[in-house]
Length: 292
Image (cartoon, rainbow, N blue to C red; front, top):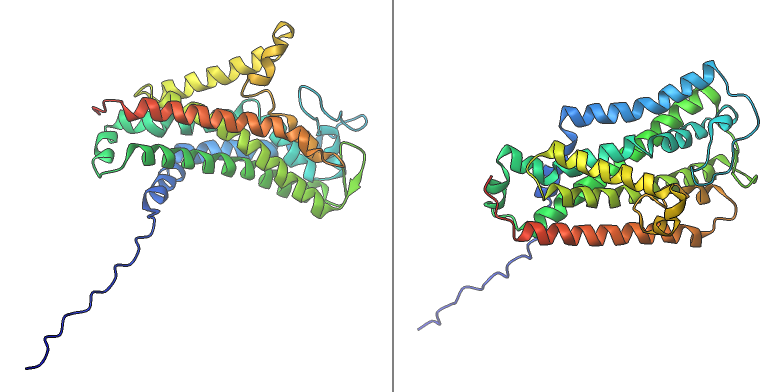
């Protein structure tokens, strides 16, 4: 008799991590007309700055190298179009960019609950921790995209109207155009990290309500209050603990040499806010009774 041959088991292939949920979230964020309208407004600001400066050139010497209000680049625009991007980022950082990120973060969870899709989304099933992480990752991607959009439009319009060439840094040192672009990218990264911290706050607020508009307004109120408290002389001791205190420290990247130690407090503060408010959002959302 011939031996009975037993079929050889084929080892199962390891299951790759699915990116479908993340891709769906990004399509949701960047596919909405209202978000495109918001990005259009952000991109229009550097274009307006470039055109107005071309028509009415600023008078006076080079702008100040910074301070509590951040560096000013208006008087440097005509010497190099790259400063249009820096000027636009400085102008939009106190209000427009935080508002855009707050709108996305506020809508992350509250928007799903408001539309009645949150309960069905969790029934897929999707773990609540994974849902929060994907939602926050979408907020971070949007923050970086918004900052890079402002910088890109500012750079293109600035170079078209004022040209490029060597870049004079805030310290008075002249560097090549390529290095100037790299420093601009570093500025964008620093600003986006700070906005990501504000996005973590907005995500936490979004878990507290089913009204995305309310979450956005509440997040913006917290941001505005942070700016106000940071300029009160009697509350100087509170400044380092506020989420917006280090937002203008990107000016250090436009000096030579760059003091990386001066950037660490802002990055550390952003990391702390991200960890604290993501943890708070998870603690709130993990035990929340989802009924809508």
